[in-house]
Image 1 (cartoon, rainbow, N blue to C red):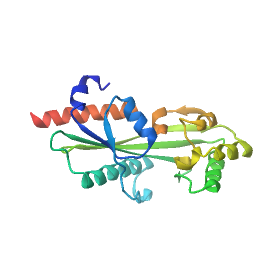
Image 2 (cartoon, helix red, strand yellow; image 1 turned 90 degrees about the vertical axis):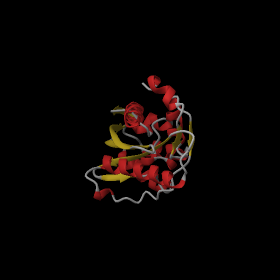
Image 3 (tube, rainbow, N blue to C red; image 1 turned 135 degrees about the horizontal axis):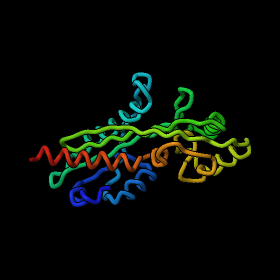
Image 4 (cartoon, rainbow, N blue to C red; image 1 turned 180 degrees about the vertical axis):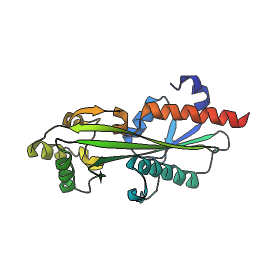
Length: 210
């Protein structure tokens, strides 16, 4: 999708406001060259102050890019594009973040066990001229898991830095029966929607420059 504007993007200083190796991998899959500068945003927004979890995730991503924008001086020789994202797992009105320890990981996976939950990923883009934010969601059905399987999965160490205590792109994929929606939303960066918004941002930048 980005090939028609590749010549423009090659001119951008692109910053990924995340230390997530999954997001780095996905942004690389788009053929983009970028620097990784993790955001220092505390992620302390109150989800209850938003109409839904999607808006909450999008605003968290927006605050991440604003943090980078404040800390990192713009590149005077070329335009800057900052990309931020935030992924959350929800079920029955409850939000599941990254587990603090193995016991919490076990509790999370036990609650998600044999249920369909919703994953939201919010994405924010920021250039000198424009800001955009959006979110996508996917419904994920976890298989019926025995206590033995849950404990064995936790012992791999994979759940400990993942929202909801599982990684869809790793061993955790074997726990999932089906996904209704974008796989990359669950992984942490919806590639199609992100590409669409990058194209839109570039088009609006060009319009402003005319």
